Image (cartoon, rainbow, N blue to C red; front, top):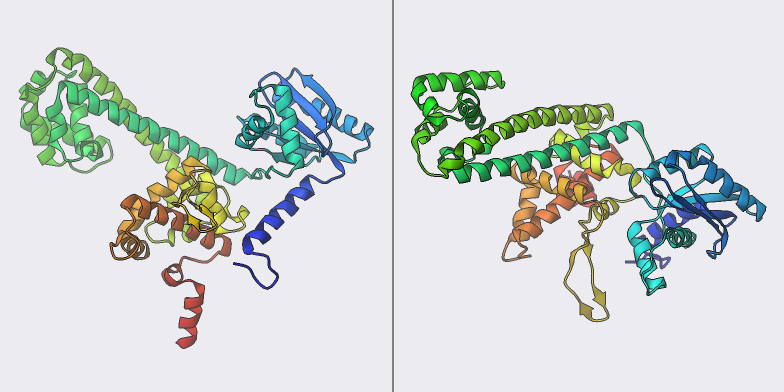
Length: 450
C-alpha cells in the first residue's frame, strides 16, 4: 500500500532506519572493523570503498582494546578523516566491552550480523576462506554499505531483567532434563510408581511421598512397606508441611504405598537407580526453589519499571510470563512498530510472491529463539482465560474459514501477544479487549455512536 507521495509505510520505516545508521556511519568517518577473539584482535581501518588504510594485530584482551581504538583514530586522522566508526560482530561478550570502550571515547559503534558476514564471505570468495584478516575487512565493508544495525543500548534495570531471564531459562532447561531422567529411571526399575498419579511430576504429594521412600528408607521398598500405611501417610504429611504445603492427596499416597510390592522392573538395578532418583529429586527441588526466587526477582524488576499493571491488564498474561518475554525482547519502545518486535522474534510470515506466482507462506524463523519460546509459552494460559484470543483461535482453526492447524493458530496468537505488549507499553494505556478485537477505528465509531 502506498499513499499520495508514492512511498509505502515500509519505505518510510526503512528510510528512517538508514538515516539513523548514516548518523552513526557518516561519510566523513573512517570505519574501524574489528574481528574479536580471546587474546588476538584484528583491527583494520578502511574508507567507504573498503580500501584498507591501516591494519594491525593486537595481542590483548577485549578490555585492553582502548589502545587499538586510539591507534585507529590516529591512522584515520593521518589520512584526512574527521573521525572513526567502530564495528564488529556481536559474538560472545566481547562486543559489549568494545561498545563500552567506544562510548567512553565518543566513537559511534555499530554491529554486523555474523550471518551476513558469512553470506558475504561466500559470495566474495568461492574458496570459502575464513581468516581474521578477511573477516575484519568484510565487517568494515558491510558497515560502509549500512548493512549493520545499532545494538540495544545498555540500561541497568533492563539489563538486570535480561540476566534474570537467562537464569530462569537455564533453570527450566535443567528441570526438564531432571524430570526426563527421573521418568527414564523409574520406567526401568519401578514403573508402577509413575502410574500412581495422572501427572506425577506436577503433584507435590507424589514428590513428597517419593522423597520419603528414597530418603528415609534408603530406597529399601520392603522397609517402607513394614512402616505401615498409617505411619507412611504421617511421614508424607510431615514432608508436605516441610515443603510449604497443607495436606497430601491420600489417594496418591495409598496408590504409591500399594505399588511398593509391585515386582515389575529390573530388580537388579533398582537399588542403584533409586539412589540416583533420590539425588535427582534433591536437585529438582533445589532448582524449583531457585526458579521461584528468580521469578520473584523478575517481577520485582517489572515493578521497578512500572510495567506490571500494564502487562497484566492483558487477560491471561501473568507478570512472570510478561517478564520472561520482556527479558528476551528488551524495552519494546526501541522498536518502531509492533511488527518489528514480531519480526525480531521470528514470528512474522515470510511472503513468496513473484509476478502471478504465490508461494506458501511460512514463518521467518529468524530473530531470537528464546523470545519466540517465551511468547509461545504465554499462549497456553492466555487461551484459557482470554476471550479475545480464544475467539481468534476458534476462528483460525474453523473448517469454514482459515482451516489452520492448532500449531499455526497458536503461532498467530503468540505474535498477537507480542503486538499487544508493544502497544500497551509504548502507549502507556491498559489493554482494551474491544480495541484488541476490532482496532482503534471501530472503538472510535462505537464511542461516537454512543
